[in-house]
Image 1: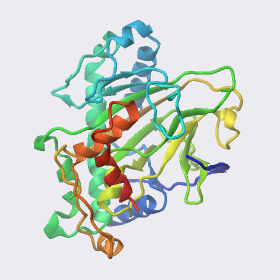
Image 2: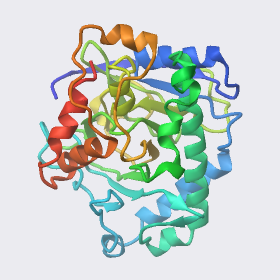
Image 3: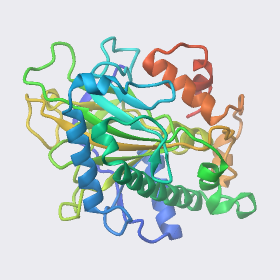
Image 4: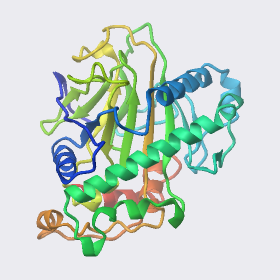
Length: 355
């Protein structure tokens, strides 16, 4: 993906969602329309600093375990398990090496139990992992309700519950994933590229991203095709219990709204790029992050949202073929992991409609 390296830091709004008001919904929608990203203040949420720090401790311990142990739990085609260094290719158009990072994907938990094999270092913390996943789900559902409020979805069509009703666990399985990520340190500047996670948009409805102070690297592609860094601690959050949660719009929310809510392309870089922001340049240190990728139920049809603002945007456009959430996800995973291209056409339909 061709773009210009930037030196600016993007001033994404920080929003307090502890109260579910119409104004909060409008602010969230405005941020999603302009940036595709928004910070949510960490105070006043069900997630607490202890739960977040505990997750990072669990992550560090797992990723420092022997490779031979981690390999026993490699990525499966249900998108669960461990990914090794360079296994994932998020930007296949420009990257033939794969991303220099590791990850572990957890599917949804049921009654505190994982529905997948877990390595010993993770099995020992199954209860904590399940609780964190549950807290993330609750926050994501609240955000979906606020986005629906902000879009003024017709109450007769579902109103504030329009998005959230399509994500209820009781209605069936989904592609929702809790992911821990590790970007190992490097003492030398990469010979070809400082990219740690290739340019991509996220596959689901929305993503919750947890980061650590002093570990920057996230950049988003602005409308001028410049890469702009996203700070870990935006102004005014330095004294919060933990860094604000970064929320980004995924492909499905963008598709549902005809591209009104942006699914913004982003990447992770090393400080050796010289991009502005926190951290030292030249030395790529260890970086950890936690992402919660929230998806609707697999058989959800991706139809247009019954919002006047969306209808205005869609005037004169062809709706195109209706696909389901699982068709979209399978196509994106096939492209990312090289599992075959038979289902990639479904993903192309979704991405082509983002506007």
